[in-house]
Each structure stands twice: as C-alpha cells, then as structure tokens.
Length: 550
Image 1 (cartoon, rainbow, N blue to C red):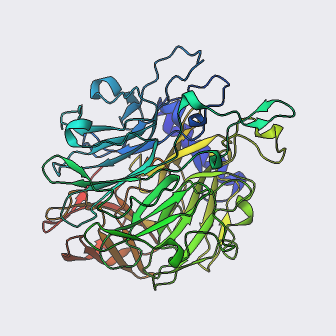
Image 2 (image 1 turned 90 degrees about the horizontal axis):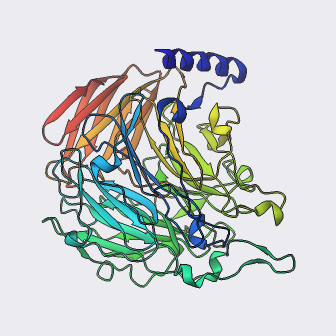
Image 3 (image 1 turned 60 degrees about the vertical axis):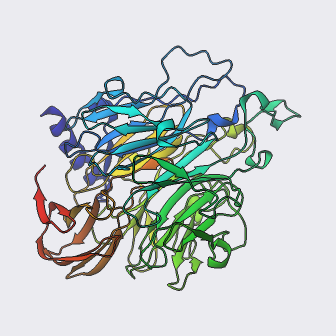
C-alpha cells in the first residue's frame, strides 16, 4: 500500500514538473529485484568484459505475469571478487521479486552473454537458451517450476562466443528453430595489449583486432532434438561479428526472414525461401551499410512498422561517433536510410547504443523508439573527453509526420548507466510497456511505466495449435476508427534479450476495435470483431477468444 502511494506521488510530481506525460521510475530496489552484473575483470582489459550482459522476460511458471532472467559474467584471471557468479532467475510476485535460481535449476556458472526464450517442444512451457563465452546452455522447462539442463541431449553445440539469439519457425513446420549470432575469435590466454603506448594507458581492443566467425542455425526436428543446419540454411559462408539479431517478415511473403547487426563489418539481411534456406540480401536491399556506404558497429536491432504502411521498418543501434540507423521499408525488397531526416541521427552521435525496441509508449497507435546506451571503454574519458562510460537512456516519440522527438525528462530513464541488454514487456500487467535493463558490471534497472496518457489499448496473447505454440511469426492486423495497425509476434529483438511475446496495441481515443485479423504462420486466417478496449485477450488458434483477468 505504501509503495502504491509513493508511486502515485511520484507520478504527480513528475507530471507537474516535466509535463511530458511519459514517466518511468526505477523500482528495482523498492521491489527487491537486486541483480548486479559482474564482468569478472581485474584491470587486464579482457575483451569479453565489454559486451555483456543480457536479460530475458519470460513467464516460466505460467501464472500470467513476466519473470526475469539475467545473464551473469564469470571470474577471469586476476579477479578478486568473492561472490558466486551465476545467472539469476527472479519470480514476479506482483510487485515483489523472489530469487528462484537454485530452485529452478538455471544458475549457469558459465561466462554468460545473452539469452533467448521459446516453447521449443510445444508443451505450453517456455524454454530457455543461454549464449555463453564458450559452450552455450539450453534449459528445458519441466512444467513444475524447474528446468532440466539438456544442451547435449537436445543437439545444441555452439562452442563459440555467442551473443544474441532468437527462436522462430524458419521452415513453417510448426516447431521453433534457433538462430545464434556469434561474435569474434577470442581467448583469454591470448589477450592483446591495446591502448595508448605513449602514455602506457591500456584500453579494451577494437573489434578490428579480432576475426569474425560464422553464426549458427539449429533446426527443430520436432522430437525434442535439434540439428545443426548452419551449412544447409546458407548462412555458413558469412563470417560477421554478430551482436544483434531480429527475425521479421520484411517482404510480407508469409515467412520469417531475419537481420543481423555486425560490429564494424557489413550487416546481414537473410531472405527466407520458406524452407529455412536463406539468401543474404543486405547489400542489394540497402541495409548492409549506412547512407554513406559505411559499415557501422551494430549492436541492438528491431523490426517494426513505424509509418503504418503495413511493412516492417528496421532500426539499428551503433557506436559513438556514428549515428543509430533507421531504415524505411520501400515495399519492394529494399530500404532507405531515413535516420537524419527523421530526427534520429544527431542525438545519437555522442552515445553508444545497445538494447533497443519499437514500442508505443504513449498508446497513440504509433511506434516510438527506446535506446539503452553505455560505452564499452571504461576509461574512455582518458582518450576522448567528449564521451563518458555511463550514458543516459533515450526515448524518441513518434510525431506521426515522419519525424521523432527525443523526450528529455521522463523520470528515471535519464539516469546514466553502462547499458547493455534491455527487455520490454508489461511487467505489472497494467496495459503499458515496462523495461528491464542489465548494465555492464553494475546494478540492473527495472523501469516501471507510470505514464498516464489517457489513451486506450488492448493486449493480445496468441496460442498456436497447428503452428508453433508461441505463434511466433503470426501477423496481427488491427482496424479501429483511427486506422489500421500491423504487428508480428516476435519476442527476439533488442540486444542479448527476449521480450514479452504478447502484442500491445495503443488505440489513442478509440473506444473499441472494429476488427482484429490474425494471420497464423501456417496460413490460417481468423477475424474477431467489436472488441472492448483496455483488456487482455487470449486467442487460441481455431479455439476462439477470451478475456484474461490479471
């Protein structure tokens, strides 16, 4: 009761002072979500220290609210810490959090980087894949609050430096496959010296020092096992430096393609032939480089329809000194870089972007953009006084006219941190999007959305029957008085993260939904008319629609 009073007080004060209507408060300490990432370093500037860590939102216990899984580092040579460094799972108890890591059996002691979530066996329980610096780990959800570590028996065999990963059904057989982005060739025992030799100031190395490696694609066999289809899928020959990955049907042909953000080499766009055989189209499509023909240091990435034309646009976060990049879908297989004309270029030049997502924060029916920032060089001020290690987060509101506006004062999002992974979802089930952020070598953030824009919404959760159980790849077409919105079920986006698989539609002042059309991945089409607003809906493929009470 006291916490609710404090939140309401905070809303009033913030709205009065800033008048923005968009307000977040970091509730991690108040709610007992205590996680501190440790990169395991000792001053020797091991390169692996710079890129983690990730975070995933998943309802692991099927109680209707989102739980949180954090990836943790591990001790490196010379580390003088004493705490136990394992990944952590926190159970959501309605505004309070319990560490259930050991009870659930998911305390991976590896040097973990990111994670991905998906119901790989279609049993109704969400499973968990962890990317590591070294052997990745897969946890199968047993449906009783515990997981079973089943990496080898399932057929996963990625031994590289894994970064982001995403589940999606590449061949439309009803089972989720897995794409794993791998970063660079690097070992701790061969850690090169980088920095300013004149002053003897050591720093983390540039990615140019290291060789890129091939990503991995694992095909779901439908029997509890996976087969390495990296070569068969057509991705083997491309050795990028993968950090971000996002699936999405960018050409509207009914199957899931995907995009990979690489570090200082050309990004990759894979077009799906419908059978999980992919052709790389980034250069032809105009998304391999920025508008100046330059490869950027891509980190986080997301697909989303920002202009309500029914086609997926693309956003990539990049290094300081570069802008983030917004690619607008031209509806013909190509994209156009609209970063600066849309107002997103200049504000990002001095920042280093990681986690990101298209989200309708003010529920007006138009997708906004959130970005988590933080430099990779902890002593960057010694080399460039214009940059800082900890950096602010950014929220850009869609102005609906082909431009975005940065909101400078929106509560605690302005607090600086060394941001990395960011996962987005309605954590408190109140009809708006919240954010959990994992910060490198520091405490995490739980940004609860306290905004009261006065707009309506609906939240939709799909359950596949003849397609994959998570219904990843489903296209939702919503028609209301204000117009038509299109969204795809796709929790795999941002950076080292997995997001809420439910779809939140902002409706502005519309008081009902005229029509909601579901295009399931296997081709089934269903329509639901005259839906009430400000409600959570569950739609089972072929089984009708129901209201969920939280």
